[in-house]
Image 1 (spheres, rainbow over the protein chains, first blue to last red):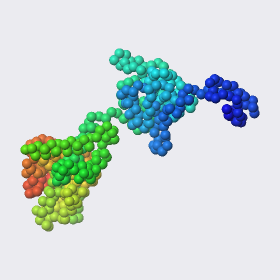
Image 2 (image 1 turned 180 degrees about the vertical axis):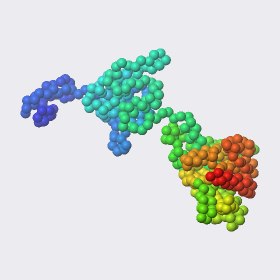
Image 3 (image 1 turned 45 degrees about the vertical axis):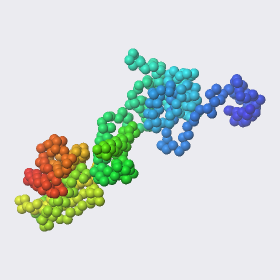
Image 4 (image 1 turned 135 degrees about the horizontal axis):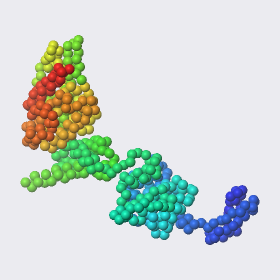
Length: 280
Length: 194
């Protein structure tokens, strides 16, 4: 086995059986410095099994997050929200793989359930926080049980984690926690989209459609009759969509297809009207 | 803002015809232009497309007699009605002395009427005007269409300060000059106050 002395940096070969199964003490033949060679930890032997994140060319840079929890809606909620905040998210169900992933990818954020199979979430937290190479990694613990209806008590020991959350945390509160841990994310804290914002967007979509219809009555009639509405009015629809997108916040557009739905509903309604007329 | 040229003893006022797309603003101006004495009018400038879409504005200078020895010249403008062209509408409202809101009587355009009225109020506010105090006349156009909403319902929905309201069919001139006279009267009354 070839070894590099940590004192004089000279290289020498030692008659040591690999892979190491127990710690071995060796002496540098050049300077006499004594070193202890330790066997690799178990997870390092299986590094190839775990996904890594390719950060090349990602502008603006997306952060890496790992979430270990049961595959349940809450985990999806966390993942979706983190993606919106600029994180690439990888999911895990157990403690060992997430600990390895965080180490090998220098993940900026780890969210771990307190209780995980194998290695507990609190153990993962302690391991991350004890590693000087991971001093930039933020850890959030997820409470194992949500008991809002029975009692609510904040944990007295977070095992080094930066934050603690429970299931059913509101989106706004979760967003605030992430922004507190990563102030450079910036921007304003997003609250949930108010119903009135959807109403206003629907109203605008109806108005744009109404304009398209009144200025292109013949085309509209032909498009409905021949089933070519979206083709022959493509320019007008594109113009309308662009205006819609310039006026409606991305938060509303992200969660809905209001403009497209408004057009679809109109076409459907007109087709039904036409069918009724034909039957009559 | 009214422009008074003391040397020429001339008063220039700006009236803007506002309303949703294809409600008949340009048709109002066209009718006024067609039926006005050639000596009393200037050239009608209209930037409309083949789909009757007003791209920027229509403009018609019009002489309406004298007030206290001053010749009154009204500049009539229309705005593009489609929701897209809000920037143009804001620009055209600058320095406005009176507004005519042309509402489309067709039932499917009632929401567009309301939206356009709100847009007018908002854009006036941005220019430092208040629709409640600006000389303002409401016109219900296209009264001849079978899909027209009753005038009572339109009044309930669109008239908000008891402004003079006229029913019109701009295509045949019905109500067009009544509307113009009403807004001109309000503008001149306002002028006399100053």
